[in-house]
Image 1 (spheres, helix red, strand yellow):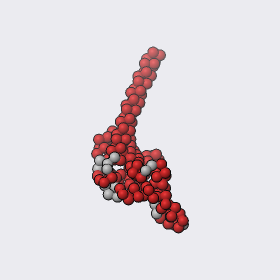
Image 2 (spheres, rainbow, N blue to C red):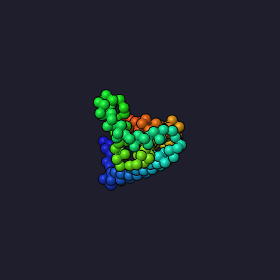
Image 3 (cartoon, rainbow, N blue to C red):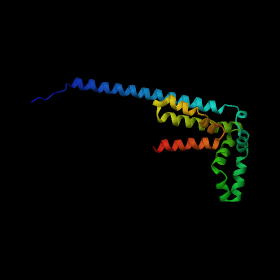
Image 4 (cartoon, rainbow, N blue to C red):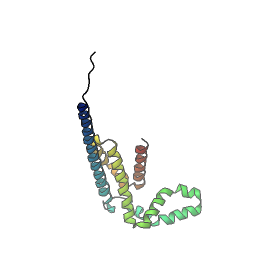
Length: 167
């Protein structure tokens, strides 16, 4: 009978090795997550600080931020059909932001949140491809959605959030 016995000290050594490798992988995960959060914040902050004169429709978004509560009230007075047909979620977001922020800051906040969420969700999904994903975020079509088409940029960020959360 050839039964191999493991000495109790050896089993403790093996457990310590497993613990130390999980600590290393946990610390690298935390480091990578921190880098992704910082890159996402930089991306969102950079896009939100581009001067409004550099992209079209900025003045229209300022008008939305200023007058959205009135537009929403007008739509509600006309009934449920006109309210649902005239971007109620967008008007509601702008109405809430306009209660606390001036129009320029409200628009820049939408840009920041959209760009930050998009960058974070794209980068966190597969950090091994960080440079390729950063290249993707710098594509003109992605930047355009966050700067010129604010509604679509915000919608894409919410869509990505839903995809990541639900798996």
